[in-house]
Image 1 (cartoon, one colour):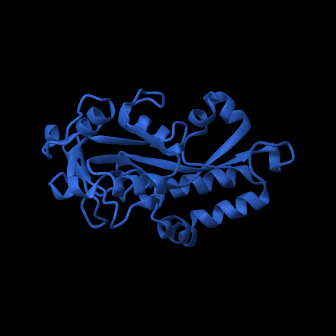
Image 2: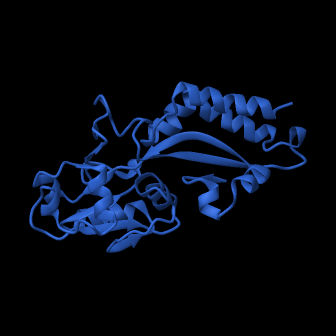
Image 3: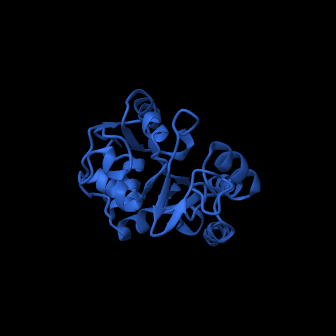
Length: 231
């Protein structure tokens, strides 16, 4: 099973239950940019601090003039509750998968979020990095003095696994007695996972779809996890 959020948050399992039932394979990461409507971006709001984003999504900041923008109410857009994007945003930005949020509307798909940002002045949203583009411009976010920019060549970029608003992309395999050593993967699953963990898979399936490749240390850890499960 594929998931863009941890299975414990998605299904309400405990860590021990998850460990007994599945093996978590992380194959890439997805940066979660914050995007604003073009009129707000053109008015000069090209970056916010983490505290400002939290304030907007907790209802403490309600007008763009409070963060250097025009005198205009903020139209706050969220993803559907229970989606991997929403769960990860709450965990990373608000500190808890169940943290309360103050939003004007929610959408079930990233494409719907992108369209809403394009069609509504004064909008702000969070979404998957893969769905951004020229019409949906990510902004920079300053976390504790480090500005993460929407530029692949920046020293600190939202296209890197160090960006605080990123999430693991999981493939879960089922623990079954019929698997080698009664483990959580079989030979076919291991072959597919291995392909995704080498240069071809990271380039074609991860980076090729605007996701973030795993750093070398994480790749080696995931490969070792597979090796330990095989006979």
